[in-house]
Amino acid sequence: MLIKTRQAFRDHDVTDPAIFQSRRVLLKAMGLAAAAPWTLAAATQTRQSIADANAVTPARLVEQYNNYYELAFDKESVAQLARHIAVEPWQIEIAGEVEKPGLYRLEDILRDHPRQERIYRLRCVEGWSAVIPWLGFPLADLLKRAQPLSAARFVKFTSAAQPEAMPKLRAGAMLDWPYVEGLRLDEALHPLTILASGMYGRDLPKQNGAPLRLVVPWKYGFKSIKAIVKIELTRRAPLTSWSRYAPSEYGFYANVNPAVAHPRWTQTSERVLGSDFFTPRRKTELFNGYADQVGQLYSQMDLNHFF
Ligand SMILES: Nc1nc2c(c(=O)[nH]1)N[C@H]1C(S)=C(S)[C@@H](COP(=O)(O)O)O[C@H]1N2
Ligand SMILES: [Mo]
Image (cartoon, rainbow, N blue to C red):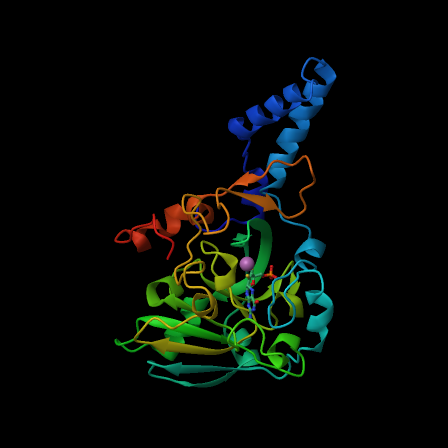
């Protein structure tokens, strides 16, 4: 299925016997397996926990646990700090290898591209994930309007730089600001790739990338750049902020892949946001579960390398 709708997610039965099994092993180790009621409770709870891994994450968690390095390097203070970001008026520059470069007003873009709900899993390279109902439209629709020239092969995205509102920009800390990300043109044109201006049925909170952010669900979260002010079509792969900072840790492609470890930690599993101590970690899937839709894009590529 191309797009996981809210309904499809609820109906999806994802009980995983392997995890069910490991839970019983854990209980056995705790000396509890003999007690039938406990086992039964554990089984029920396990089903519940695994089902939760596919349930939409509560909005409050997604709004209060954020990576936004312009603001802070921890996740808990981002929501408060984000209040100072100015999001009105907002313009997006479309530049580079296009027939129709120019400054586009956000309200015009949103008027011409009605929002659809897309429920995607977001998998951060740090090893956690959340299931988020975005409101957005295919990036392809906007790019096609600007009419890419035949020389265009990549897309470079740039985030807003507002030093008054962004402490880490004032400090010149960590990354080379503004935050820059990029996609190959065919990735950018893929129907799963969206520009989101909302989530959970409302406009995007500032900490989640208002007023407009990218969402590329089969790649690690750092590709999903927030507060976009510029989209440039280029001939060469742009140098992205995280690749520049640590090329061996954050590649340009950054496709979710449980078989390729980050140099400092494994990527085989992830903590589902909202999990408690007893919730098993979720097994990370190749392309974050979207292999059927996007695997074809990488048929020529050695996936055993972290790009
Ligand atoms: N401009 C900008 N965009 C960004 C980031 C950032 O620090 N700055 N962090 C990225 C990372 S690492 C992740 S995991 C996601 C987090 O999105 P969320 O806070 O909406 O969950 O945003 C991505 N987009
Ligand atoms: Mo991330």
